[in-house]
Each structure stands twice: as structure tokens, then as C-alpha cells.
Length: 287
Image (tube, rainbow, N blue to C red; front, side, top):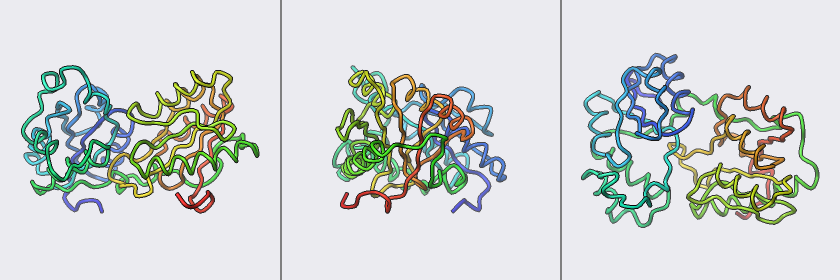
């Protein structure tokens, strides 16, 4: 639940979500102290928070000190961080990780480099300093999409079959903590998201299926931690879908963040796209 302390920390990555969270927290009367990840968070974020400190992606200790000094007992994580950065050439010299980051990276509790493993290792470092990581959606639950057809165009019977096929596949990929998005056509997998992220997965599908007309399915993990890595779509997603030649986007109701809803749906209708938010009980079971 939102903190009784009227100051909340924001660890911000890429995209509109950090800005929308900061606006929602501000409207609720919270003072927002932001640690913005350099080369990921938007520069305009600084205008939407009460204090903004820019930090490197591998400066975990600096992030923790920023929030401790500000008296933030709760922190939310919002926005994407490009995980592929960790495989950049000369990554140690490029990012100069601090001791807290190194300790989290080498922790015996971090068994692999999957998203959840890495994020939970960072969460434990915050908790060692008495800082609780909470869900941004406690402050702005209105961003979660509700069940139903969001656009004028509805899926055809063939597209419905692709949604069902893609749902089972996407849930299995989520269970393995590989990715949240799959692209299918005629009940065949065209592309599966891994480290590259949703947009590049969709773009790759467009290259592999130049005839277009494919279906994108994006779901939450079966054991989704709503504190981080919640599936998110917005206007940029619509542009990517259109450029790649997609026809349908299926997302999970009550587990997907929809940014700038009016603009997103207007773009989808303009591009002739279908967006449908479905519930797990409507989909094949056994994932």
C-alpha cells in the first residue's frame, strides 16, 4: 500500500511510465524523489518530480544512498532498462559498477541472469538498507487495462485461433522468464521476445513475415511480480506494430499497463489494428 510517509522514491528507466507515475503520485500529494538511470530515463522527467538525481545503470549503491538521504522508505521501479547493455564490449570499464552492484551480481541467491533473478537481487540490496520496493500500480491502478475489445476492429476467427495459440506459447516463455511477447501467424511462431525487448521482437517479425497480417501476444508471467517488469504498451507500440505489418495485439487484462490510453486507441484505429485484452480463464489452460 502507498506509504504513510508523503515522500516516495522513483527509480526511473526508459519510457512514459515514470512520468505518468510521477504525475499520479504528485496528484495524490506525494513528494517524488527520482533516481533517473542515465541514458535510459527521459530528460523531461526532471520537470515532473520534486528532486531528480541522475545515476549510472551499475551504480546501485548511489541509488540506495539517494533514497536514504531523502528519507524515502518506499521506492517504485518504473520504466524499462535495456538489458542488452550488460553485454556491451568492455562493460566493466564502460559502466564502472560500484560495490553494491558487484555484491548483488555475485550473490549466491542470484542463480542466473534472468530478468527476475537480477531484479530480485537488486531488491534485496535495497531491503538491506530498510527500503521497501513497492508496485507503482499501488499509486496509479487506473493504468491497468480492463478486459474487452479496445478498438473498432475485432479479430477474425483465424486471428482468434492465433491468439489462443500465442497465449499458451507466451505463458510458457514467461514461466521460463525468457520474455513476455510472441508473434504468430497461422498458428506458427514467427518471433519470440528475449533480451531485445518487445519492439525489436515485433520489428524482427516484420522482417521474417513481410506479408504482414500477424498477431502479437503480450502477457504477464504466470508468477508476475507487479513491482517490476509489468507488460506495458502505448503509442510507440502502435507505431511499431504498424511499421512491421502486424494486424492484432492481444494483451492480458488487469496485468498490462496501457499508457496514454486515448492516444493509443486512436492510433490503433487509424492504423486498422485490433487490440483485445483477454483474461486467463478465456484462454487455453495448462501453461
